[in-house]
Length: 182
Image (cartoon, rainbow, N blue to C red; front, side, top):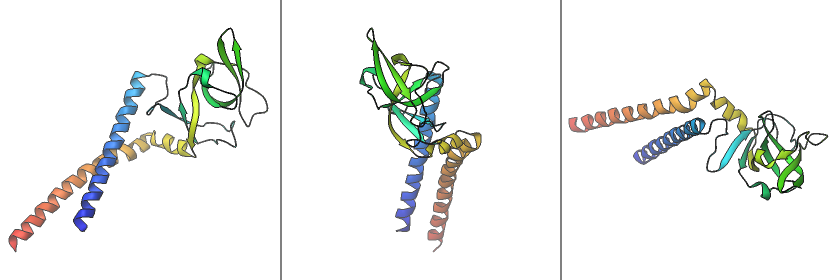
């Protein structure tokens, strides 16, 4: 029973470490190849909410997941993320879809704002459509992106992985010596 639990916990920890290392490599690769674009996991881009303009739907610190869509698929009441002229990413609700000479644009408004946004959102500025969110997960992700967070999520598990391997080998050696001595 003890050996089975030990084997299972070692395997689970090793899979966790491999998954973390894989995510770190995937994120780093995307950061270098897609400069200026948010990281994407299987087509979903995680974004942290930085303001309360979409209260009560989203709050500061929530993590949104946005999926890239064709501008023609966007309808009134959809929540979209777009890049404004200053380069900031904004997530607001579509209140009107406009078509002018075949080109689409959107009138947007934050649910917690009193008026519509000043700028029309052009189809080229559309990043994607909101699919789901995780409350407060943005705080966790931001903490993990700090140097201390990186230490906790990457370096310590990696050291733990190697420590378990070394400890397991030494323990096996001790068990073999004890059994031979009997």
